[in-house]
Image (cartoon, rainbow, N blue to C red; front, side, top):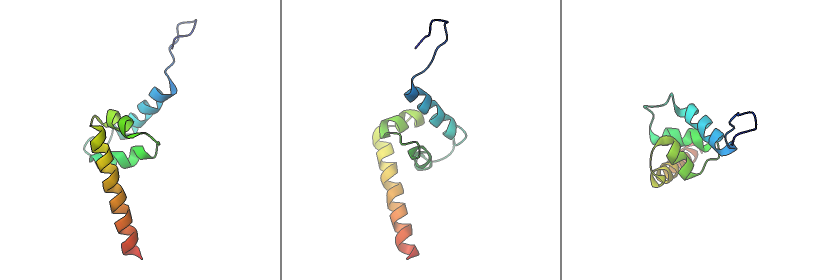
Length: 79
């Protein structure tokens, strides 16, 4: 979007994705699960996370499932 004085503004979604990318930019060697765990806090969809991480949507879905399983196992063990 461009204003009358020539300034360019980005849509809120693209800004959100840019901020999400910046949050994981220092995590280049981190696993996809770690990145998904971080980006889930932004309430991003699987496809948005996939575009930020440069992976497939199904891979993000699998990573979320794995994180969910690990959380439920750790809760059961702490009881």
